[in-house]
Length: 343
Image (tube, rainbow, N blue to C red; front, side):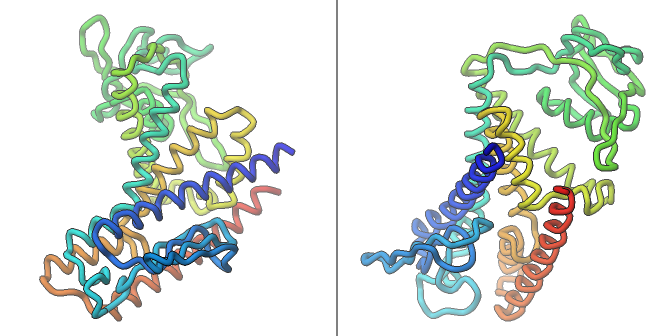
């Protein structure tokens, strides 16, 4: 029963995120007077569709909850309609392309505020207590230390500290702390290292001092936690490219559903935190300058602005098609590994 509930929650989470993303494109297109042909949530055969008598826009719900689209006139080539996307001013086209990711990022930030609002205390960068046999304590870290920099990088929240130690603490770290009003640098602080699926991670072996959140604190923590989450998304992507994780360390839709299903065992807050992470992840990843993604289309728009003339629609179309094929193949491979992990 728990598994069924988890799967339903996962489908709902994906559906909401897709709806928000496509709503961003849709609202921006309507505001910029771009002709919208269809607004769809899901992919594949239509389960339900309705055509607006006023605008002629088709609204549809499709079978597979793994994507969606906002189909617009003239988004893939030349078109004589003045309301076609290709004929709108460049700044309007940028807004339409950027709006989907912006909607996901904004939703993630709002959800982060809600998540933090539900907690009794939010963490600070101050060490409150060490775990038993903590390794870092042996290298000079003390209770009451406020960690402000790690390897020279400014730490903006306790989540930033956790992410930095977890991902980079497999090697000794230089920690800059404020102790009794004095700034001190602790060189080569080490942490215990563990492995998960063959990937090494460092263990944060202390607890952070909790702070009761007022409204001002919530606003600040919402911003810093959201930035820290985006940083770890980019950091993970860079590590993936460098080969730290390998293909087995990447999760696709099946793996994400499995994680969401597991999180339902720990209550609403756990699911909400995952919603925050996935929403920010979706927004950030879609802005990568890769063919078939919103970021790839924005890149072509910037190239057009610099060249003062558009790239041939056929050439751009082929590049995006090739990017989509590669993306789908990559997702297929990841899905196979996700399924293997289940058994």
